[in-house]
Image (cartoon, rainbow, N blue to C red; front, side):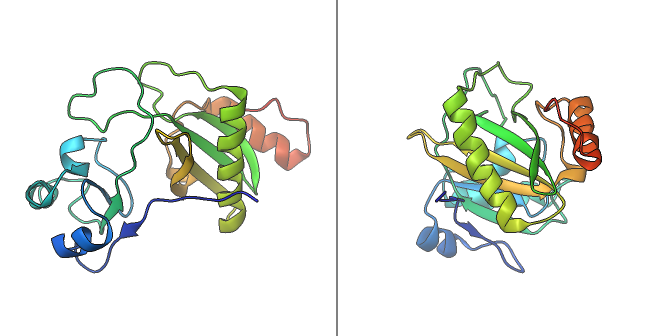
Length: 193
């Protein structure tokens, strides 16, 4: 059986309090909107401690993408990093994005398509697809994207699931993805995305 791991998260009608984070998650935390991040800017999404969290929330109030979203705080996962300088960007990590159409894998690619290239071994791909497929099975929606990442200890985690209609293609060819979906719908053999 596949064990689907996802980082512990806190949210509510208002931003989680420092006391909630101290007691339930610890520091640092990854902070995101319930719908999305803002251009992966680290200063808007990673808080090392209470003061950084308060500053981050103040920045959110003026951010055009985040100001209206519910604040979600997640336990910060130590993901396997990709080489390269990230500046004020969430450090690119060893993550993959999987698209599922009616429960079938339609496309898989590197999440950080604009970072230095990273190779995925057949075993890593198999493990990533297994956990993403289990998440897709449990959610059971027609068109889903599942982002998975590998931590520094080699364990795969579900980073998030999204409506695939609004997800960027990341390292998946949009043409191959749509061709795979058409092939699935028509019952044709797929070349994969």
